[in-house]
Image (cartoon, rainbow, N blue to C red; front, side, top):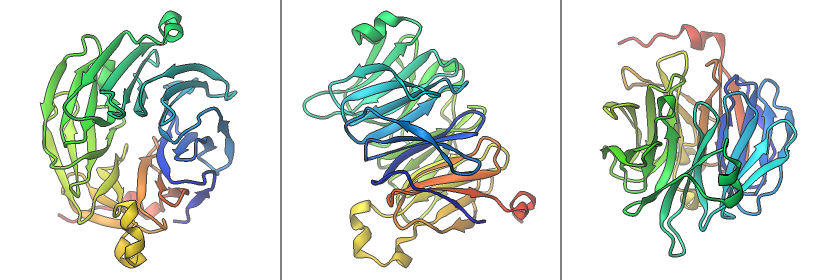
Length: 325
């Protein structure tokens, strides 16, 4: 399994995202650059230039028309995927931490940080209404006063948003009314990442409390727990196998105080039914900040604190692998 190394960032990777077909991979980092790559050979398609601060999040709609990015320069920007042209600029009062298109690609949500005296808000815009974009006026803004949102994904059919919070809570917010539909607190520390399965029926959460947990999207029932001995920065669900991949490591600031061997910067594979770890992939020179499975399940990518994105294509025997229970 020889990885393809994507070198397009000078600072640590914050998020990577495949489009629905999986032919493109988008990566964002703390260096203001948004990169689009061909996932098959790692060739760079181009960059989306305009942000002036670290970019925290990226998303792509279902037909790969538009790309959405959120940044610490207090803006959320909409781009034309093919040309790299900026279509919309939504200014906020604090950094944009998470962003996402709903299933239709018509409605976007993004959350802002609690900082500089401003509250954390979850904002919803309808892209079909140019007036909302022009006036920078979301059709709905949900305040989250108690604990800020650290990651969020759309639920099935665009009915609600599932948000992970700094205090370990996972909440469902209705995209129609903005009300809090459900609330669970299975984690004891901050949730670093939420990712949904390919059919949107499940979400996996990665937390600072050294666990990743699998939840039912609609009911938020806790299904499985995957335990490790270090904080998990990101977790993703395989679209074809009962597998979950996780990436983590220590806090970036503690890395220099330990040897690389103890640092454990591998991506780890767990069986999602048996909760057993069955494989590790080494490679990064620092903690892994984000992992993502290709939509066809035949490869996965990871982005690290070292500023590299690595695309790994699985060997044939991965697909025949059966875990002996």
